Image (cartoon, rainbow, N blue to C red; front, side, top):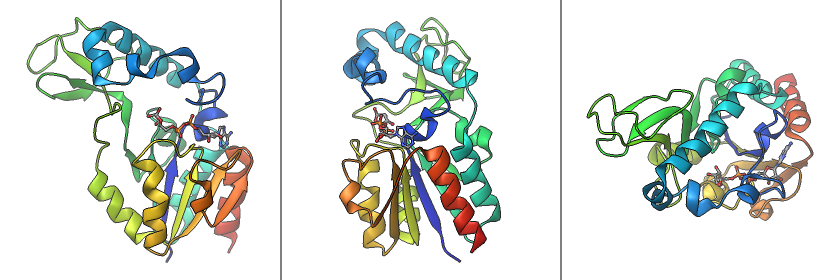
Length: 230
Ligand code: APR
């Protein structure tokens, strides 16, 4: 019963119509990272940050999961071993594609967090800085998203999964951001077979035993069909 651990990045949502971060026309070509995904940026101009995430929340709600999301859900439902998805993405396309065992290590657009009392609640579609925290009533709301310099969520649990993986797969991530970019090394240390799905080799591509080059909607679907046929 092989355990499969899957890490996904922005590339798995690209064919659904959500731009990635580091493509020429990606998010980091239009926004300064230090302004919209750092605690300092939020302190400096919280409205700019909330508006950035309001746009992304609206965009995520306007697109659909693609064949790669659905293929991973089918793998989880039909594979006889455990399948776990760890996503760096903050959209809800894996949930809407049917994946159950899912970790949002960088948080999710669907969550709101109070910057003062750390209360969490479901985010409204549009967040405004004057919205009071439902618990402490301070107007200090922020998206429940992990910014640069903050600790990704559930790291102990994620490392447990990595050490138990028989197959580790990375889909649509450029391998530029740690700790996610270090997951392949952890999985290899644990003896996992490693496969990278991408349009090109990522920054950590040389650490993978196998590469499936092409659009994830095609390559992931083909891979899942093969796995389930054997
Ligand atoms: N199929 C497969 N891979 C694709 C596709 C596709 N259709 N389209 C793009 N890709 C690949 C790109 O080649 C690239 O390697 O997806 C990757 C996207 O890389 P990034 O834009 O860097 O996104 P990601 O790796 O998820 O970024 C990681 O950085 O900015 C932070 O917190 C943010 O979670 C994000 C983290």
